Image 1 (cartoon, one colour):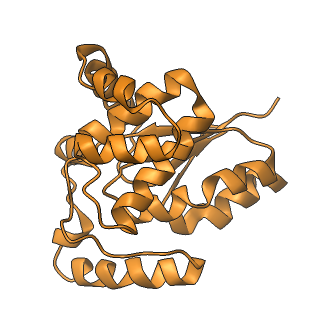
Image 2 (cartoon, rainbow, N blue to C red):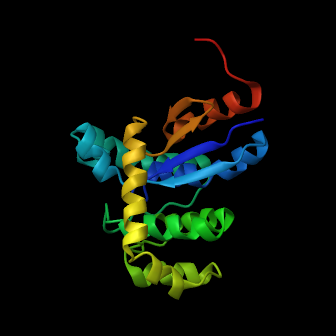
Length: 202
C-alpha cells in the first residue's frame, strides 16, 4: 500500500503556485494520491520566527526575479500580482469546505484560485472574487461563500495550521510522503524520484 503525498501550500506563495501546477501530474506518474493542505504562512512565521522572502534584504530582490525565471523555466504563465501578499484566510477556507464535497474539485478550485492571483492579478482573498472563480469551476458559489464564514470552517483552518506547525512545516510548498519532508518547488524532481524509485540511504 502506497501512502499519499501531502502537499502544504500558502496562496500567497509564488513557489506554491508553481508546485500546484505540477503536483497532480507527478502524483499520477507515481500512482500516489495528492492531499492538498492550505496553510497560512503568516501564522507559521509567528511560530517559527520566519519572514516572507520578499521582505528579506538581498533575498527579496533575488526571489522576485526567481519567481519569474522559475515560471518561465517550467513553461507556466506568471504575472506578478499588483498587491502582494494578500490575506488568504477566506481562500483557504473555501478549499477546505470544498474538500468536504469533493477532493478532486477542491484541488481544481485551489489551482484556479492560484491562477486567479498569479496569472490574472485578482485579489483572491475577496469573497466576490472567490465566488466568481468557484462559479467558473461549476461549483455552488452561494453555498461555498456561506460556509466559509461559519465558525466551523474557521476553526478547522485554525486547527489545520496548528497541525502543520506541530509537524514542523515552515514554508510553502512543503511536501510530506512516507514520513519524509521536502520543501520547495525545486524539490519536485527529488520528490518524484523518491515516490517512483524508492527511498535512498543518506
